[in-house]
Image (cartoon, rainbow, N blue to C red; front, side, top):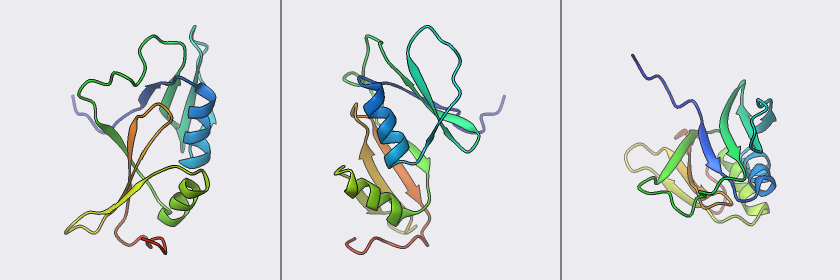
Length: 129
């Protein structure tokens, strides 16, 4: 067996609508088809694949993530993403990786899940970076 990539991340959302808005309006994912499970939820897509599964009405929420720290997405349009974060009044950290010059943005979703967004080294930096 060979592992090729992450298939999806599941987030136990305390507020499905708030989480959906964050992932769609701020991070740019899109709503898509989801099987008729017996719990409420939303599947969010990048291209043709659902990469974030939001689930509601579960006992366990992000308050207890154990040793889990964050997950990461490869991303594009650094200045656009930073602009959307600012417009939504969402705190973020912009880091330039030493030696690689890759740009990283760290942000948390409405349930406190830390997300790393990776941008290529040739992406323009926001004016105030």
